[in-house]
Image (tube, rainbow, N blue to C red; front, side, top):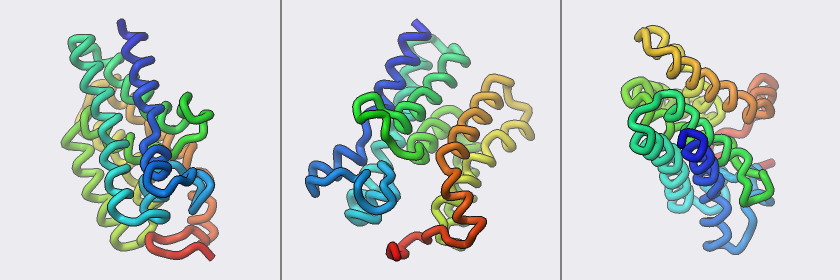
Amino acid sequence: MGAVVILLSYLLGSVSFSILVVKKIAKIDIREHGSGNAGATNTLRVLGKGPGIAVLLLDAAKGAIAVGLASWLTKGNDWVIVLSGIAAIVGHNWPVFFGFRGGKGVATTIGTLLALTPVPALIAVAVTIVVIAITRYVSLGSLVFFTLIPIILLTQGASFVYIAGTFMIAILGYMRHVGNIKRLLQGTERKLGEKKA
């Protein structure tokens, strides 16, 4: 049952709402426009606030639903719950339905972590919002979010399963943001609302 739930979570994560919403509204492939990323931030850049917010909420819901279903179907098996959340993020990043070309998993990670560890995730979201508001770098805010969760859980003495799981989620986040990290260090990363040169 655990393997089935994890596989279902991956398939749920593979439903790319950015690709679907943008194709429905504008008849284009979001991966060929803006930053080329199939996610909420690029949807915001290409189509504006409404579609961007819709994609953010839908992608976050994927992670939360995966965690909720795993908890319900396995009667609280921590490893399956955590791995199901990770599977949803992996599905978003490398979706089987869209040629394994997905997004960076930020919104799905937010939904997953809000379901897994609500209070630490809310704290991290609040800090992330402040970072983005001050710097206007969404990527920097995302990296702060990934990093804070396992640190908060460590300080709270959380279970090894959740610390290990959130650390793996952070690694996935860093992997998908290598280019952003390089541009941040070089001072060439695009800010929120900044037009492409």
